[in-house]
Image (cartoon, rainbow, N blue to C red; front, side):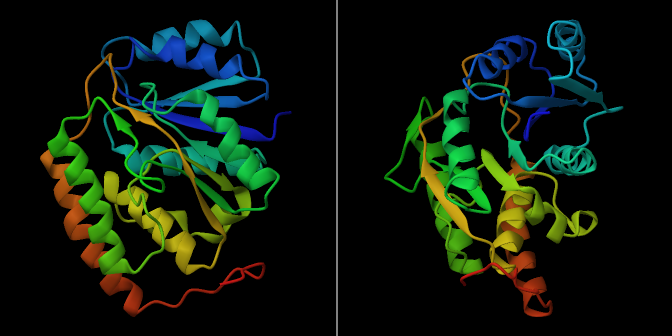
Length: 249
């Protein structure tokens, strides 16, 4: 059995899903993939189910009843992975904004270098974003700066969604108490990981905006992130975090 599972939430990704699956399975390392589809009306799940016969025991799908949010999809996937004893659990988008080749860098950071969370970072080495309008680049960059200011977290790309967790990180977090569902979910998971004292590494990647399908960004998601950071910081003032025994923080 492979030691690594890539969780890919999907909603209306028929243009991308087969290509991303085949690309991941062409890599030199053996990964398993779990697709969590929120009942896409465009047939995304049907494409995946067709591919399962070709990639038996490597490709899996869970179809939920409706659009329930990014955070709940990942929480579902994390629990699924922990029940099946995967050691390295990845988050990744379906739309090729994350280069599948960079999965190997994230894996090596955790498996070979001993980090507990590896983050594919757009901002650890300048600004590495392609095909975004300047307004969105600036919004994203300064949003991360805002998060660092409020939370004091030592992570440059606080909203990054391309990550690899060691299983003991997810076991240490009470997943049922994660509050947010949009991009604030990404911030919350990193913040708790950092507060628990796990070793985090940011790895420079080039983020390329999707060329097929439609973006899931909305004003509601952005608002949740802005307000959620303040709530996260306030909640942390009244919470205790038991440091991970292997921490050097």
